[in-house]
Image (cartoon, rainbow, N blue to C red):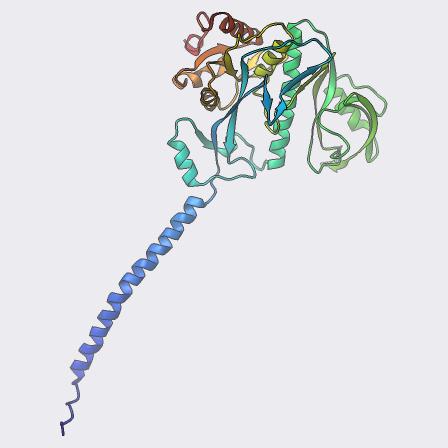
Length: 375
């Protein structure tokens, strides 16, 4: 018989326990490290995906106003002699990510910062704090409609064609009392039986009407209609939820359709396109000309946002020449895409002369560049 093993001493037991503790600690440390790493990765991933208050401007498409967009003719003129044309007159656009109702992440911002063709800026530089997606859409729609009306007026002024001023429903807020009764483009002929002379008088007449519904006589698609528009009270004032603008009653129908694209910056190119279709021959001489710029009713061409991105978009659409507002020239210099010749313009007459020169010579020789304007 084997004698029983002697009982371990107290010191041996302590050493054994200490050894197991060391083994457990050695196993715990890599588990702790892995767990910490996973937590850190989750925090980093969450940070990279967390929305940040920035917007990113990227080059959008350049669209030939003389052609089609979304399978529809962009410019249609009816009721007057028009002429076939050639070449292209391209409006240029900017894609904006991160506006009201949309978000961008730190990863997207960092990637955009490293891309010379894109621009990153704080959201509040472009959109007022608290502005909603619906408000932004309405403002862009109103700006586009007003731009189109003004652009046609400028082209007709150049051609000495008369027209009359009107008061226009420039936009209707979604879900507002007037939504479903009035539409953007309606012309206000009378408010409670009185004809307004301009936007200010229309607003005064509307404010003077008592009752929950305001009687209006409007012109829509060539038909006069009598409607009663519901209202609600906001800050003590009765409102319909519409935006009014200066419109025009042209002697023929001019329609410009570019889908959901909004904003005022295509005004100059719209004016050139209307002028082109109302005059014999191809204004462009067959060349591919892009451009941008707001248009005032006195013909002044105004500054726009995203000029660098618009030049990149024009180059991507094989434009040869680009008409840029002189007021944007400081942003243009040093950023002209290779192969795109840029001309600085301040008025519609400047843009028309530049286009006619390009058509006749195929060059910008003698035309002002941004370096000329800024020197």
